[in-house]
Every structure is written in C-alpha cells, then in structure tokens.
Length: 170
Image (cartoon, rainbow, N blue to C red; front, side, top):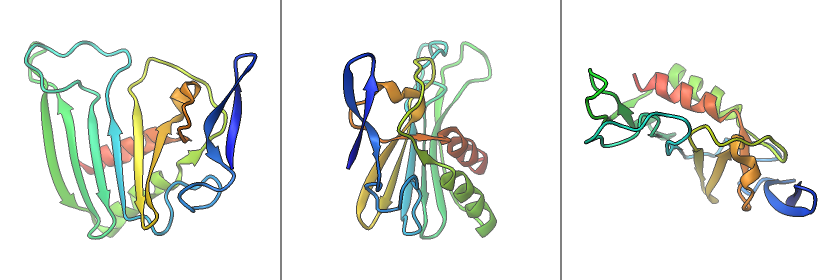
C-alpha cells in the first residue's frame, strides 16, 4: 500500500514509502540480507562553485558500486586540480574489501531508513541509492528532497553511505 502525504494545504501525493517496502526487506529496511549490489550516485548540484573550463565533472559528482559477491567496491568521483583554475577530472578505481571493511560499509547501509515525512531543501547535491536483490532493483532518494514527491521512496542517513564508501575508496 502506498502512503500518501499532505503537501501544502490541499494536495496529497505519493510520498514514497509503504507499510511493506517494495524490496521485501520489511518496514523501514533498505539493505536486505539478500542484497546483491548497491549503486550510490551523487549527481551533483546544490550550492557549489561552477567547475573551471575544461572540467569533466562537478566536484560533488560520484558513483560507488558495492558488489556483495567478492566484496568489490568500484568508484568514479570528481577531483579538483592542483590550482583553482585547473579543470576537474574524473577518478576511477576498484578494489576488493576485507571482511571488516565490508562490514563497515554494511553498518552505513543498514542505517538507511525509509521515511514518510521529512523536510525539504534545494541546496544539496542529489543523492540516490539503488539496491539490487533477486526481486529487482529498488531506488531510494535522499529525504532532503522529500517535498518533490513523485512516488519516490525517500530515505534518511544517506550521507553516511557516501561517507563510508568514500573512505573505503581511498
């Protein structure tokens, strides 16, 4: 059952969330025990300076892919040059995580919680996570943008996922 939220004085919209999550993980759970892969994307945006001419990306752009089989972490993120006028470049990498490192990532993933009410903003980059299970791929959007509605499923604690994956990529 889709939960509807009141937006403004009169509008009801699907606010993403349900009493039994679409991924079958149980109410509020995003990272189920049968998860096979996570893709975390930060599409950039918010209040950041424009990239210098010739840049391949914006500083906040990033994609992390965590594959359960093999505990592999792949990444693509944007790095600044040595001087402020140097173009930003994409940096890519991949590595296998130790059991302890994978467990560290899972702590952040298990902290993701579906929300049915949240505030709203416009000054932060747009972050999403995609969780793949045998039942399919499920998209979750940062609750910071909850007021956009649109039938999306919004989650709290998404910043912790990006922090953990960024640390493990270095």
